[in-house]
Length: 312
Image (cartoon, rainbow, N blue to C red):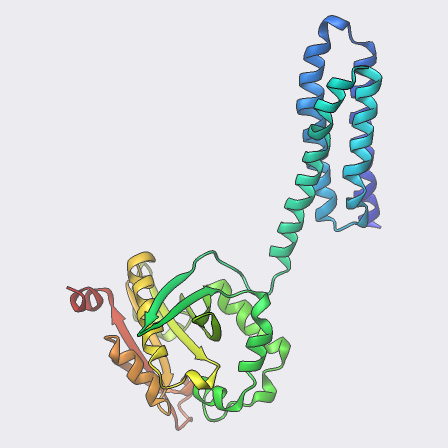
């Protein structure tokens, strides 16, 4: 019922404005016709069609597709009745229709953004590994099939989440929830090697409370996570190269103060990747901060000073 009211309101107000403009045009003195054309056809009608086309599209009513054509026809009818000159009519016709379509397109873009699971950004990072090109593209909903695949591979999960990780826990909804949360906390990237998607990585705000408690509130603390989903690319140095790209981005572009890499004590490979990039083991605690757990969570840290000294 609310949708119907909004649609009727949009169409009703539009019709009222168009009717008033028509009445004004019929009663106007020929000497004022030029001003009438400027105000009505170059301002009032385009603005009206843009605003209400935008509002209709946001309501997601099917009638949004009718609006540009209907009120383009109404505007043309006003032009024929008032102007009675075909050359003027042809001049104002695009001005009547284009704003309505612009409002429609803009609203569709807004809806796509609002309905997205993964929050997109517009940054692409470039790097190299020997003769191979590494590209970090913005992660988006189009990549979800790959994320479903990688996050349900038992071997990938072992190295990413630990020995107790269960692929059955990572159904599509769970994966969507993971990437929705992480993409809202920072930058998620799809990893490509020579145009082939092989995994994902992220640089985000630190979201572990007991780590944040060690720092002043003004300190910009970030964390890095990597998942190489295509196993044929393991043990090639890809992880080391990607961490290098992410910390360069963190310190040089994002101006971060501290960057962490968090891994489990079972995952010696990840620890070596961080150490190769200058990280030092800064702390450890039981997994999930649970003292009853036998396995440990290792915190590797790199500060801005350490990063800058290593590149001096």
